[in-house]
Image 1 (cartoon, rainbow, N blue to C red):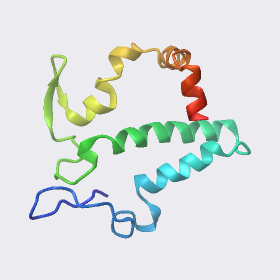
Image 2 (image 1 turned 180 degrees about the horizontal axis):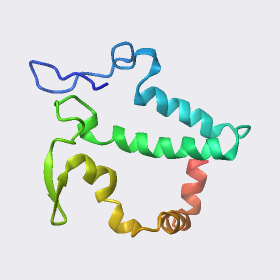
Image 3 (image 1 turned 90 degrees about the vertical axis):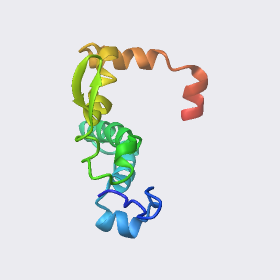
Image 4 (image 1 turned 180 degrees about the vertical axis):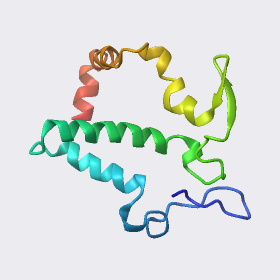
Length: 127
């Protein structure tokens, strides 16, 4: 569900859980759910890994401005763009187009590279 646009201002209204997340069936609620699952060391590793994957995807989604309000463009799927010389849509650029050149088909290698670049100060801050 998208946050409605204020008719007068043309800008998104504020998030309202009762309106925007009925029955906890929205990305905000799911982020909380998967965050709890990831932190629960009693859950099987496979379930925690899946929770991490959903967290990464959903956090990326909520930071994509086209998911933050309803412009009737299906989250950017109907916004056509040219990216790196290819015709595509803005949602595809956000989901894969930006990261693919860095990953170069080796997701594991890229993840290990990112992990190696975490500083001791960052580890301490994040723990």
